[in-house]
Length: 168
Image 1 (cartoon, rainbow, N blue to C red):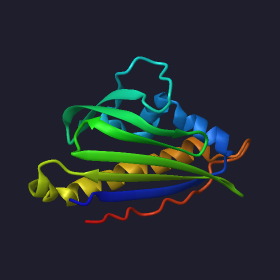
Image 2: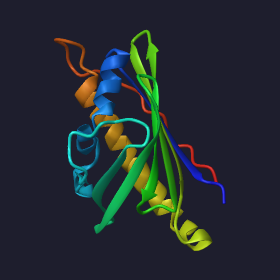
Image 3: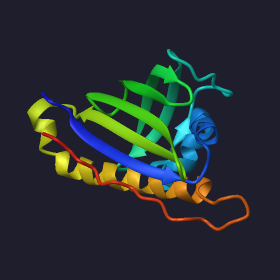
């Protein structure tokens, strides 16, 4: 079964090394996650981010508590890293984070490929899952802009978030 795809691009007015450093700190994940998900990192901190690092979380998805474990599968500072779900709510989840220096600062792209559990039966719930993921990544994009897009001494600026493009 082909995975579904969600992709978001956000531009922030901060230098590439600063943006990558923010995303390299697993402690910032809670700041980028909607509060109703009750996101909590279970892995003792500080977490040394590198290929092979495993991070355990607890979230509440649709009100149900779930534990989630991801493993960093690629680590290429300050340009990219990727994580793969080893245990969690999806049958498969691979999240690539890319960072590119642009004239205005940094363009960051989140690309998530995922499969739902329960095969074709699970796919019946895809419209609800897609809606939830879009909402989560909309929140994430707004949080990135709120936390990182203000130039030194300036107000928070506007960034762009591209729409999700799921594929069947």
